[in-house]
Image (cartoon, rainbow, N blue to C red):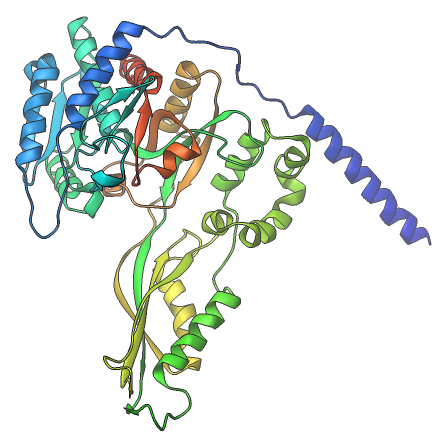
Length: 480
């Protein structure tokens, strides 16, 4: 009985500690701050972005067409004449751009990125022509408004204004823009090759990835600025089952498709890869917890107690939770016989893995190959790349970016973030320890859903804020 009382006493103390800690978790952001938007500037920016949207800069793997890119670049020269006068422009083979603004010191430069290309759009499904840049109700519609012509326009516009004011940066500044990001092309890689040959090592690289997202996590009532500090890896695997084939009228057991189906079912039902909450994901939840309702705040704000429980529950509750904590596997394509009455002599299924830093390509393939062998299935790596190095969130570059976000968006929470997709920033890890992924754009979850979909759009206030952010960032940037 004494042990029971002691156990209950410990539970009671834990409950009291958790409740008290939860009550003292405070939202330190200034929610009442209202920025006074310059309406004339806002409309001028919208008209400038509209000019970029009207160019159909779609990248194609099979039939490259650089004409829309050269036309847009000519328009950029008209929009940003001082940038083109003061900065050194380098055209990278394939249509990618690199601008160099000489500062007082060439050491530890700042490099800002945004790609020129966009994904295709089915015009008949849109409310407006996706390449018209229609402006209505303080919003601009068009392919690329968010991904990523908004940031491309914003940092060029910020440079144009700073040059006009006579400003000279403390450190060199580079503006980079690839022409084939959406098709995982070589534009960014070629740009890095060029910079590496010149000995350029940026102290901070800033690309797309995270943004300022409303309702980013359950019950969070503040915008959350998500800074991508790591990009998950990518690998395609081919799982093949073979047999002697035959006619479907006398089917044997364990045909190739049956074995593949059993293998896929095994992996789906008994997820075999590691699950772990890395510090950066923990910190994201801790940051967001300040603005959560009490129940969520109690769970996510007391990671010292509930981290293990959340690590087990999140992947079960939500695919996003699984993606944050594990390498994921999605079976995406399958092929068997070419005729409905023939048992295939060979069948295969393709899987796409997004590898987590806790379990890279080699270890993931080892685990899946071991399971595949039980079903007489072979595994083959088609193509892949490992997750990028994790940027140090205690380093000068991350802290500088965090300070700039807090300065220019005092009403938002700031947090590190894991990028689940792919960006051009991964190439820059060769020359920089701080390749961060963040766009200073306010968006909702609905805006994010439209990014590669129908009626992609951007609030005009968000564009105005982005120009203001980049102007502040380049003014304050000083790395010794």
